[in-house]
Image (cartoon, rainbow, N blue to C red):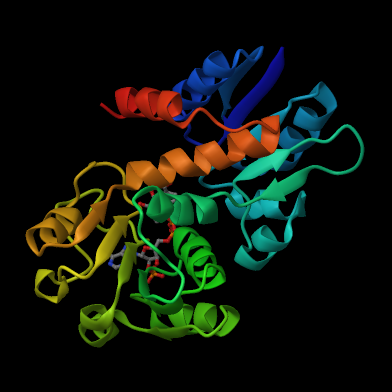
Length: 268
Ligand code: NAP
């Protein structure tokens, strides 16, 4: 049996095990997916141990995405993003690192028939999710503007992303009315019913993806729907980052509907 898992701390509430196991069952794969919660200073031993034990693949979540980046050989996209959320353990050579949050963003738009190439995109946030989103959208042909509470972080990220601009949250006033795509990659909207983007800036030409997936329908998405925009819940990004990892690990097309059903049940 192949053993996959997710490494994080805390990780007990992860919805990845049922999502991936539904995929294995649908494809008839003899595999399981479990949670691992190493102490914060034991991640290096955890990755070495996983390799030695023949673990087939790991997802990586808070607080280890940057640490694991240093412990694996990142692919070119993960190297630019500077964080790894998926590790594969080949039979020969070092563990390979990937960042499937980027595909989580682009595949969410694709799934909703929203084109990225040639669009004006605004990314709110310049942390891990913001970095993955900005590189993903620019690589797919969007002109990207990054707005972040800490302005320097947005400007530093913009300097790394092809053709991107950066600014503070006040730059949203100018950028959102002219944008085609908007992604919230901050944690705003998770703990409290708040939004990082004033409702009056949202419009019907916009497609809005909120990376926040609890609650499913954030205030930003409610405001966007009220303004006539296309809305895409963060659960889609979560699904497609998992779908991408499944495909990297197994080499098979992921059974998207089965994984989606299991994820939605787990998020209830
Ligand atoms: P992170 O690296 O800690 O970055 C947090 C970001 O949120 C930073 O840009 C930070 O701005 C901003 N922020 C935090 N509090 C804020 C506030 N009160 N007002 C304005 N901006 C604020 O976190 P992350 O890993 O990028 O995750 C961000 C969100 O994306 C989380 O909700 C996470 O669950 C979600 N996420 C979802 C998926 C998915 O698959 N759906 C994948 C990855 C992440 P500063 O730079 O100014 O601190």
